[in-house]
Picture 1 (cartoon, rainbow, N blue to C red):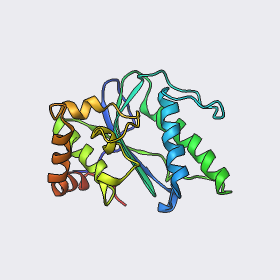
Picture 2: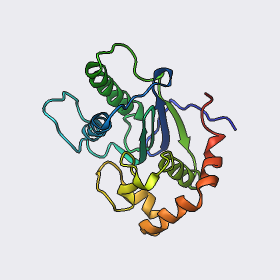
Picture 3: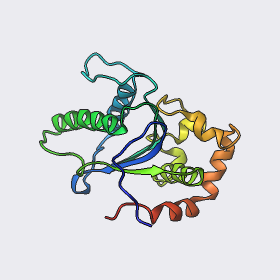
Amino acid sequence: MKYRDYKIFTLGQYYHIYNRGNNKKKIFKDIEDYLNFEKRIKICLGIFYDPNLHIQPFPVGTFSIISYCLMPNHFHFFIRQNTDIGINKFIQKLCTSYTAYFNKKYNLVGHLFQNAFKAKLVENDIYAKHLSAYIHLNPAEPLLYPYSSLLDILGISDGKICDKSIILGWFENKPKKYKNYILQNIKDSQNFINHLLFEE
């Protein structure tokens, strides 16, 4: 089954959004980079304000981030579009702002990310559950990794980026059940998603 690259975004639909560094290079080199990217997510969502960053936020509630993970050379978002404003607008604003920060910090010019981002329509609950697990299982030690939404969903931290109610609603609002699900389905979720991922 080919992993279709979606670029038509629709109100009420869920999508897996992915991109990586140009030539597979790192897009996060230190803690400050991860935190700056997360800050820009919050600003774009309209839930945080920084007067030093001239980013026009979207109205609160325009998008719901279900889960995410930031890895050294790529990122994943599982996101729902709640209005007619396309998810592409969110990703473009986020990545443009972060690229400006990154290039200034490291004295670089040009593209940080590899072409346009990739997008996959999430068409059913089974895929959605496996996708959330796959995203959270990207790090080698997911329960200790600070740059994903897993610790928020499990109630260990409160990053405020994600709408935790969506994933927890699939598991009777019990974080422990979700934790058990992802740890017990590591191979299944990786196998379920891997054959749908974009070709290298």
